[in-house]
Length: 103
Image 1: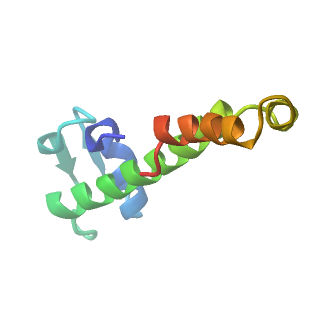
Image 2: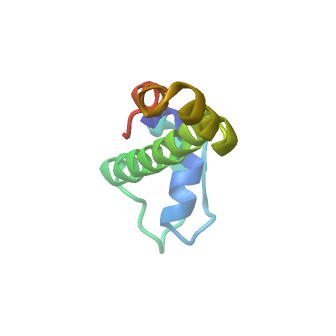
């Protein structure tokens, strides 16, 4: 997942306990308005760092889901082994692993 797919409002909400801020464009870091004088505004760098971490985590979750859904059912895998052999089964599983590599 790309960092720019993560909304800034979600990132800031995860970083601070104040609600005295807003953002005009959830995908433009320059549009943050900070109104809280007691809670320090996160730096752009820290926001981008957390945003990247969230993007990486979402990519990991998406990869797991995509890969799990692409594998044949256990019954189909056993059927492939029985009828076509272990090498064919390995080829089918490897095709899924190649299509959805670990991030």
